Image 1 (cartoon, rainbow over the protein chains, first blue to last red):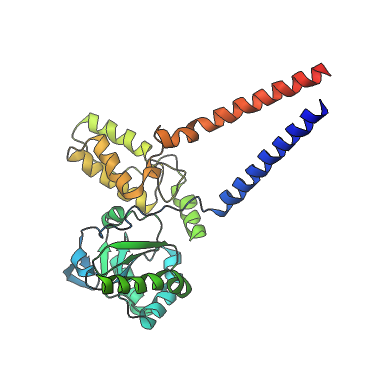
Image 2: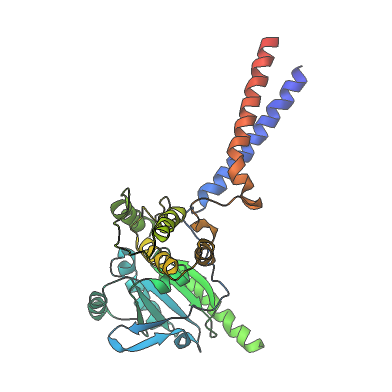
Length: 184
Length: 129
């Protein structure tokens, strides 16, 4: 009888330890994180007006030719405003174009804000109704999409894009694109 | 970013029903389909709410999209496919019953049965002593 009891205690203990491990792993994950469904897919088709150039439109083909970033932001998004400094630094320090999409926002307000804080973007597309955002699978601004020269989405960063994050997560990607191009 | 969105979801999203936009439906059947559809999709920003409840910008855009697609004659399945293609199955408020979600659906029941079984076994053993 005693032998059987010791065995079942060990079983209970190992199950318990197994659950502890699962709990540890689970707690380290971000339950709100959504992986992008568009990795390795082309940037969605769009045709939107350009901020500060209402007569002009920008479309998906304008993103092709060079690897770059597409940044989704709005002035009502506090984190977008606080990460702006980092974007200015990234734009001045590195040669990769940063395009932006103004997501469901007031264009005049955004234009004024960029005018006063500086504009790191090659152009800004006005996505008033969030349709481009929908096609991209945007769920939490700010978001940054990393594109290769063919306009294919290769990576997404959700949340503030710091200089450090750019250098650690995105820069290696850009460098690998160059190698892809060389071997093609 | 987490705290920013928490703020938005608490302030803007916490209503029993979101501000009803005056959508005009061609038929009462379309209106009914709309009301069911918006309850079946999750707001991907305020992730505990469905599209009927949330006022987050993504939810507003999704409701508009559902309305547009309904009005142009898309079926419920087509609308669902459209959103799942962009957001994944997480956007479905009620997870579908498929092979990979069997654990999700039945695990609580299964664990409950195991717990009950263990209890009965333990009590029986005590009685024997």
